[in-house]
Image (tube, rainbow, N blue to C red; front, side):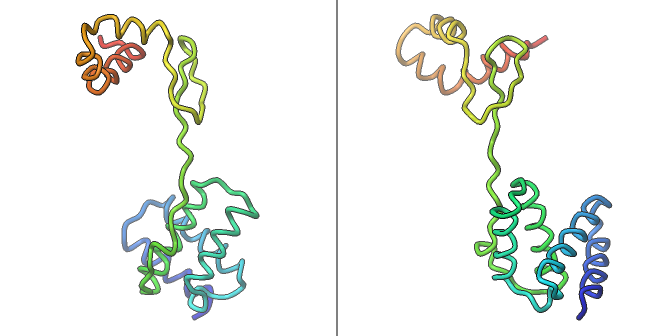
Length: 157
């Protein structure tokens, strides 16, 4: 099977599944880049080649984790559905995404940070001042703290 035949079969399978035009274009492009990287059709490439390609994207090209996962999804679909090859998904893991939490340093500050959310000292003190004993504080920390923070930054109307 040639590279063009693989891409045509992929296009047919993606359309048959009813994926969005955006997803269809992404999968088609990612598989085409994968085949061109090795200059071979995907039928001649295996799981180890997929692993090497994803590693190349991560280390050499330094693409974002979301982009690596798009390649990963397209290649998993290609091999699992289009070429009917049984893949061990543990061999081709998805890339971990760095979670970015919103840091509220001052009212209206929406700076992105990869550190946990840090609350104002005054908010924390005022919250624990309404707790009467250590059991209240434990329950409040586990059950009500997130509600208090959410209502503080997004007032309930």
